[in-house]
Image (cartoon, rainbow, N blue to C red; front, top):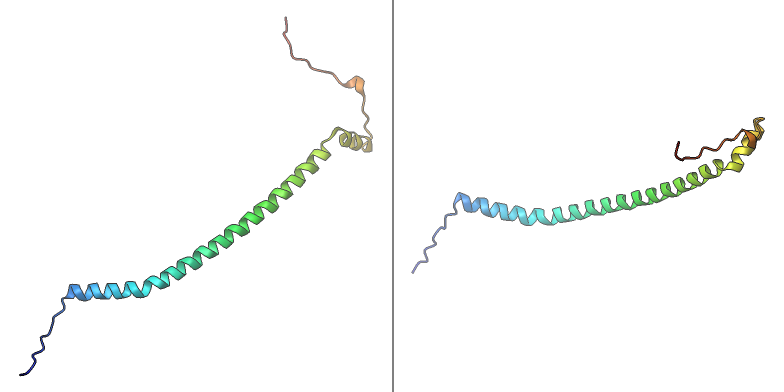
Length: 101
């Protein structure tokens, strides 16, 4: 008795399906590694930006303190005296809000 081998024909759709499944199995791990590497790089950049923001906030606070010091009355009087001006209380007029009845 001779065994008869039957050829199984694969349709074009099945070939396409098998090819797609094979490509999916090959490409998926590569894409996962690529996406994790990209995510890691983005997280690194976010942390770097956070550090820069904190540094800038500290600089801004320092500059605000310097502005407050320079805008103080004693500093203004000191600069005025250096420019040859002097504080004269009789030249200062107070404005008071009230009814004009």
